[in-house]
Length: 474
Image (tube, rainbow, N blue to C red; front, side, top):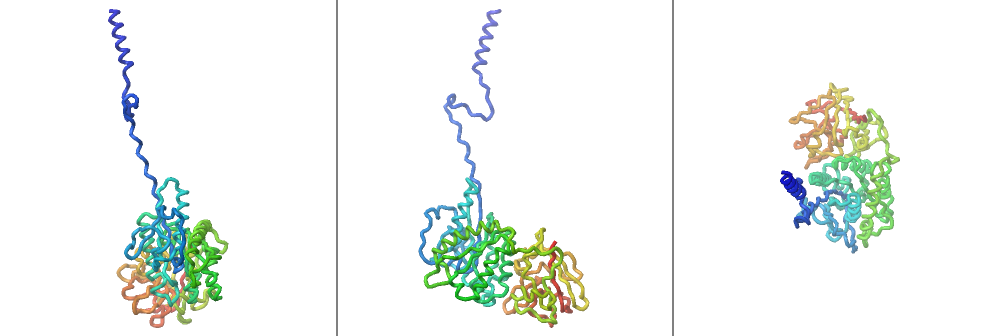
């Protein structure tokens, strides 16, 4: 019996020694099986999609001459948003022939070199990431805001150029791009035309672009005009001074210097290709400076409470024209034709809305009534066609009795008035959605009267002769 027990214990010991437990999800050792464990699946690099907008007039795209690009320019994953046959296609970014509104196949654009430098920054900030950098070109030769350029070569809110850049902003955002900056070079056309209130126009344009991008701190970089061209006419220096002064008054902006840059041969107004190459680096440096310009010394925040932006009594006349309605008699609030509408860009509140109140000072039975509301976008950022943006509003008070139903007068935010074919411009802003019938009720900044009065409420009486518009800073 003892011998049998010893044999059994010996057999159990041998079995125990030979047994190796199976462990879940662990591959056998190579020396035991002859197999190798499969390589771990490589993790995909994170995708970073960024976009830069460049717009203005011909100096965004008019550099002539030959320039040798860095050897690795084409190796970067940089593209541009095409036009015409390539409309809304992402095509390779080039230095010559960038797809601006006005395109010169043999002319250079500084924005391409900006992207070259910015791509490196993105790679440094996002090691191991897959970077896609998109340029959105929107330069148009000779464009500006003057009456002589309106409406076909204009940046006013109701024109094709403004709508074009907003449409491309929406496209880029829908395609997953984060828009990181706005490069702007413009001013020659308005300096030549003597455009009124150019400073206020630029400030509100910057604000409008930021609202459509959805970033109140979007870096906005401007550029100086060709110094030799500016020096030819003292009036041009005044417009250059406006451009130079923007970074001292508007947060997150910068103006790129143009000293020591060459012009095209026999063409004093346009930068050469070599100058465009250098401007790309200067715009990149300016972009970094703009990101840090959060509190310019000349920027003033409006006081809390009501601020008068418009006092208009038709007994004293009408505004001279659309642009004068931006700031005519802005230093005299008691004047019958007084406007500070060009300061609207300062009045956006922390909740993301503008807060307005229109008061009828004289208007028969409507005297002392008011209409108070909030809207997401500035009136400078929307025209009649911006249906989605207009709808983002809140009614606060309405003793004036403005109709807000969609099928009648249908107030849906105060917007930039759109001129229609055969119909003269009548006002700077209005709040009537019946634009197919050329209506213009709730007129703010009127340059024409209606039956000798201000068209405020479409009630068959049209009795209003004096209004005030306030912006409320909360």
